[in-house]
Amino acid sequence: MIRDLHSHSTASDGVLTPTQLVQRAIEMNVDMLALTDHDTVAGIAEAKQASGNQPITLISGVEISILWEGKNIHLASLNVDENHPTLVKLLANQAALRQERAIQIGEKLAKAGIANAYEGARKLASGEVTRAHYARFLVAEGYVRNDEHAFKRYLGMGKSAYVKPIWCSMAEAIDATHQAGGVICIAHPLRYKLTARWIRRLIAEFKQLGGDGIEVAGCAQTPDQRQLLARWATEFDLYASQGSDFHYPSGWIELGKGLALPSECKPIWDKF
Image (cartoon, rainbow, N blue to C red; front, side, top):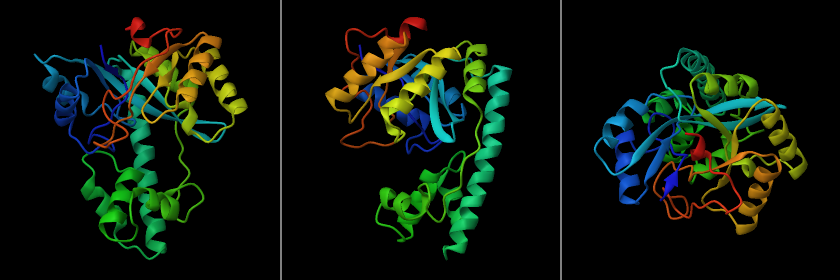
C-alpha cells in the first residue's frame, strides 16, 4: 500500500487544484493521500469530493507553521476534523499573520525596484499569498532565473525582501490538532539547517509537549538520512510518518515516490 501523507494544492502554494492533486495521486497508485496545505484546510472539501468513489483514501490534514527558538518549523497535522472550532480559530489567526507578511514582502520588493509584486503574486494564488507565489511572479517577470534564484536573491532569510514570520507556538499547534481529533508530526526535520544537536532538542521538546511523530520517509532523501530519522523516532518513542511534500510534478519529488518506512518504525497511520 502506498501512503503519501504530505502534499499541497492551490489552496496554499501547490500548482494543482485539490481535484487535480487527487487525480494525480490515483495515477501514481497512491492508496492513501493526506492534503496538508500550509495553515489552511480550504482545499479539503474539494479533495474529499474528488476522492469519493475512487480507489484512494483521503486524509484531512494541514501543515502548521510554528516558531521555535526563533526558527520557522512546520508541523504536519493529520486526520483532523477540519471544522473543529479550536483548529479553525488557530488557522484564521495564522491566515491573518500570513496576509500581513505577504503585504510586507511586497513593500520590500517595491523598495528594491520591483513594483506591484504583491498584486502579481496575488494573481498567482488561489488562496493565501506565500513566498512561493512571489518566486513564481519574479520568474514570470524575468527578475530571476527560477524559484531557487528568487529565494537566493530576494526571498530567503537575510535577503532584501525577507520578512521574519510570526507564527503560533509548538504547544498551540499540538493542542489544536489533538482537540480536532488528529495526530501531529514534525515535517521534514532535516530541512531546517539545524545541527543534529538542535534537531534532537526540537524533537525532545515536541515529545514533551505531547507530539505524536516525525516524518521519516520523504522524497530526495539519502538512505543514511532516512535511517537517522528512523533512529530518532525510535529513541524518542515517536510514530513515523512519510510524505513527498508534493507541490508540483517533477522528476525528484513526486506523489508516493520512494516512500517506505524502515521496519523498526511505528507507522503514524496506526493512530488514525
